[in-house]
Length: 289
Ligand SMILES: NC(=O)c1ccc[n+]([C@@H]2O[C@H](COP(=O)([O-])OP(=O)(O)OC[C@H]3O[C@@H](n4cnc5c(N)ncnc54)[C@H](O)[C@@H]3O)[C@@H](O)[C@H]2O)c1
Image 1 (cartoon, rainbow, N blue to C red):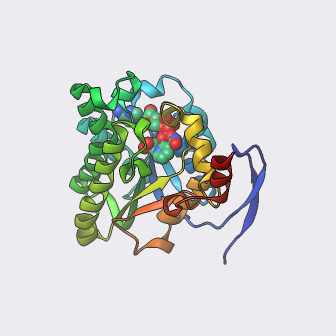
Image 2: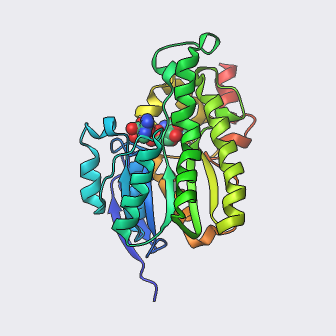
C-alpha cells in the first residue's frame, strides 16, 4: 500500500508550502555532503530525503563543523555526522566505513554538494589567478567527486542501481565573467561525472549525474561578485523563474529514487528554463527603457 501524507514545511520563498511525501526513498540509505547551514542546498535536500523515508549520514569538512549548525540538521533527520575533508582520502575512507557500519550495509545514494573557489575568495581576478589557489579549488570542487567515487568503488560501498549526484552551474558551458575559476571547476566536475559514470554504470549499474542549478543565495553562492544582480537577471531570463534550493531538493529526490534508474552521465539543467532561453519579454522591455 502507498501512503501519501501532506506535510507542512517552511521554505526560503517566504511561503509555507504543503508538499506531499511519497516514500520515494523508503529503505534507501544515503550520504549527504555539504550541509553548512539551513540555506545550503544539501541541508534542504537532507530534509527532503528524510521526508521521503531515507536513512542518512551527514558529512562536512571538519572546519565547517565547528560552526555546530549541522548538529541541528542531524537531530532533525536523525542522522550521525561524520567529518571528512573531501580532499583527504583517509577521511573519505573513514566516512564510508562509518556510514556502512551505521547502515549495516551498502549505500544507495550520495549527494556531492561541495565547492570552494580559493581565488574567488581571495578576490583574485580570472586573468590573475594564483595557481596554488587554483589547484586547491579544483581539488575541493571537482576532483573531490572523483575521490568520493573512487573511495566507494575501491570499497564496493554502493549498491547496484545506486545514484550519485553533484551540483554544478551553467558557467561550465557559457561565460559568466564573475563566476571566475569556478567555471573551469564546474566543467571538470561535469566531466568527472560523465567519465566515472561510464565505468560505474558498466560495473555496478550505478548512475552518476550533475544537476545544473539556478542561483541560490547560500554561503557558496553569495561569494560570487555581483550575486544579487546575477540572481535577478536569471529570474527574468527563466520562464519559470529561478529554481529554489527546496525545488532542487525535490529534483534530487527523484534522481535518488528508482524512478530515474536509466539516467546517467548527464548534466541535468534544473533552472526554470534559463539554459534554453535566448531572451524574455521582461528583459526586452527592460532594455527598451
Ligand atoms: N548557490 C548557488 O547559486 C549554486 C548554484 C549552482 C550550483 N551550486 C553548487 O551547489 C553546491 C552547494 O553549494 P551551496 O550553494 O549549497 O553553498 P554552501 O556554502 O552551503 O555549501 C558548500 C559546502 O561545501 C563544503 N566544503 C567546502 N570545502 C570542503 C572540503 N574541503 N571538504 C568538505 N566539504 C567542503 C562547505 O563546508 C559547505 O558545506 C556547490 O557545489 C555549489 O557550487 C550552487
